[in-house]
Length: 499
Image (cartoon, rainbow, N blue to C red):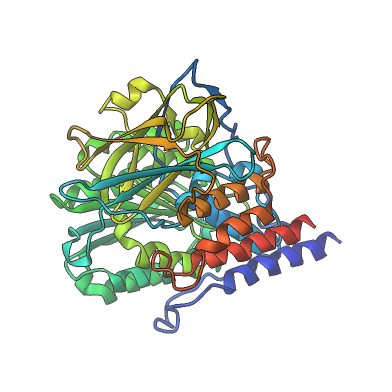
């Protein structure tokens, strides 16, 4: 029976992977090694993955604490990991579900910044679908879009985990194919370095102009996964490489590709965070791409990206590689840095609850402190936050509910800019919130139902479907990759696992 379950889980994992794989470069480089490895020896491909505990934000009385502050989170790893789980035929662990990352996996139809601003703020309030009498505040941010022609030169250091745990079709092979596609999308005067780490740290490729694309691709396709994991030493070398080839005014970024399992040298998360933070003032960003399962260290990678002025993504299939490294590559360029949000509620709100962002909350003092690190938003990227509100017993039509303040820096190290917006509570019965409001509410309902949250109220998978569907029509300009219709398919899969 145990052997049968092992084969079943392995088959489901490979089916889920192959269902969205394409753009392979192996046919173009037949002489390069491939480390495809069957995983039938792993009884459950997702067993052993590690996540930090999540204690959901509670309702807070406005009379006791009128201000709520948090750092934005532009990550999407939690959503892609959920998709991997469903494609493997199982529900994701509750602690792997971060609602803000479900929301921010998607691009929303928000207005772009105008004038010299590189960040735009919008908000609206409507009825909360899962709690009668409650309201939902949606806060939307959008980074300034930047065309390819206007994008600054890139100095990318690919920091690749080539330890034995990265072997397999869904790890090193998937990574190599995706990186080759990214090279095709870059400009000739961009630069790439490659550093690998397993039992030892190696500089596989010195900083090379992308005009030598074939040389870069040969280096990528030659990568083989084996040995233990010396991640800390490799990270130090990657930062040194970034400093040595630093481009003034450019996009200087380390792109770390790993399953997060460091077991040689500097291995503690605290020591790694300290190392990452020591480079913040040098204008070097850290983006982390997670791969694989079975010993996946989600909590470590999320924390490192949080402290490294970067984003954290989970790569479950080739389509996700294309999304991150090609279609949304402009997001590697940050147009709004250290972005923080503070919402000050009025007496027209009795209580509020921030949905998600549990490890991003901060004090009012931190909001006003420009030295306090916060999240980054890439070019054209949108970020969404939701609050569930309990209105006061007596309010007037369009009563002001909250003052929304956002601080951000256009460039790291400079003083912050302040955006402000007042938001009222609509009480007119025929008030219609935007389709993006319904889509955001649907994503939140899905996350609440999937994790069986104690705050889910009447939220269900069927409610999530009803809310998401109106904003998920094919051909929607804001969704060229069809990710919204895919969400509907995933909700249906989750329903099948609950039955």
